[in-house]
Length: 113
Length: 118
Image (cartoon, rainbow over all chains, first blue to last red):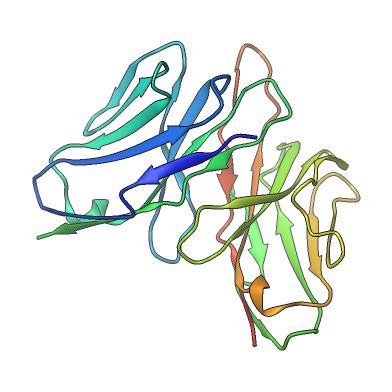
């Protein structure tokens, strides 16, 4: 089955700096990669996703890049703000199959004011 | 639209006791998931339903966990008897069936039930 590894487990940045979180996946057939943000005590919420037919996707200060050859994808947050502080999870799956989302272990991002 | 509802939000029980969690998905969402999220880890799928049928329960510890979605809407997850290692947040999520060219629809999560087993 799919295995997703996520690094780093914790990340502290100064407000205004950029943050990068990286994930690797094991199954080359996976073709859908969402990222979820989970604030303390709250539910995970989808913030951005990417499909394997594109290499990069951007939404305001958030971007995701995908390297299918190396089987890794990354979340980039620019101009970080204190409200970006949360746990971020990556996930991977193969759409149209019975496979489910496999989640990474999460990254605790802390943006220091 | 209303989100995924779960209850209770918190539950503390002794080991070997039983506990049940309830989930009401977003209206019209045929697919429902139960996840277990242990502190410091990502959500781990326990069971997936499509309408009232089980699609995947390969990671459900069936000797103690059970789940049902009898009318294809609300779902309950039960643990009997509970063990210390069952302490976790139990998340319910739902999504629409794919169709109309959509390869994968977003999963919407509920607020979770935090279970503590003493």
